Image 1: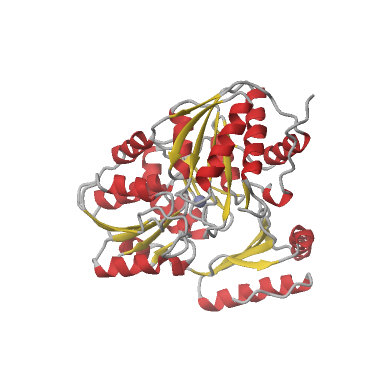
Image 2: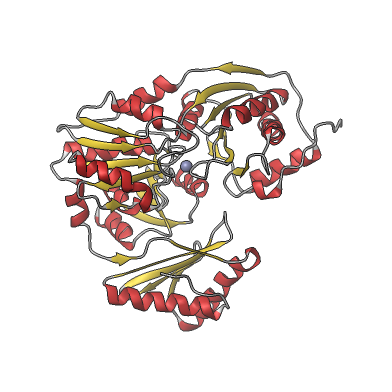
Length: 462
Ligand SMILES: [Zn+2]
């Protein structure tokens, strides 16, 4: 074996669901080439030949994509470059063109200095052990060699066509859209230009410095500009995308945020009409209202682990037509391929509203009333985060509490629940509480804080 290209990828970059680092510090073009070499090796040794490559709107992305392409090519792969666009457009290319995998250069919703890679092998998410193995291959320089090729393919128009095709509506809506200057901007503008109704576009110009606000719609302050536009233009709703277009945010005509677990109730209602009894998956952070509503609508709710790669895998395993995460990743396998595409989810949402008479605000008001916290995140040392959850679980077991431990502990009480789980991607613990009323919520928060303090941590502010 000739070990000329062995390259150690900074271990902090090899994360659970993607590879990510700070450009110029942990991540450079040499790393991108090594990732291409190693990923290309995995695909080639598995008998694969053709992969798609796309990149987001970050300033560093074109250069990283070029280095990545050279690495993939050196491992013998035919690289189909799809250019700049949202991550779901890359997934779309892999499915639509029947490729053996794909890599997206994206820092998702992270600050401008970040960048990284999301991968799929065949039609499956490439994560966890796959990523660790990729790091080992690069460090050993254990690469496949071959003569590949780099070819440009145009998928943008096909992608937008597909999004337009699935829209069905009988009344025209007024909609504000905010791409946050992220990679979804161009596709969003092309899509919206072909939908009926009145549309107001915000931050549709792709700009890797994110000059207007951070492209993360799960943080409410990032929705402020959208909320203003909805009010000014008397919109039916507002839609926001994260930096690479795989996560969705929405606000109704009254300016209220609908979180992903609320939007999922609407999506489940529609999907279950065509797939009665189907399994619908949501992550462990989702409101009990969602699970109850799925059951009430005749579906089979499944609470599963947080993590877009884990959810995609579970969905494929069970043949579930729909899944969603609190983080805004929504996955449709009904009339689509089962990956997280926020533009696709947005069109489905518009369709649901435009076929009916109910506004999004009225839909929200009709949901069963609960009070809950947002997702709470607080620091916990890496070597303690899983241990703390285990300690809490052990203490709860002694009390006979009703606990779901699919991902951390989700404790069900007579009027609500609380969750404590360790993040797979950061040194934080994640918590959430939900109750029937404010008083109940305070009690659940106290229960949660007491457990955290028993494990020697200081409780989060909430
Ligand atoms: Zn994203």
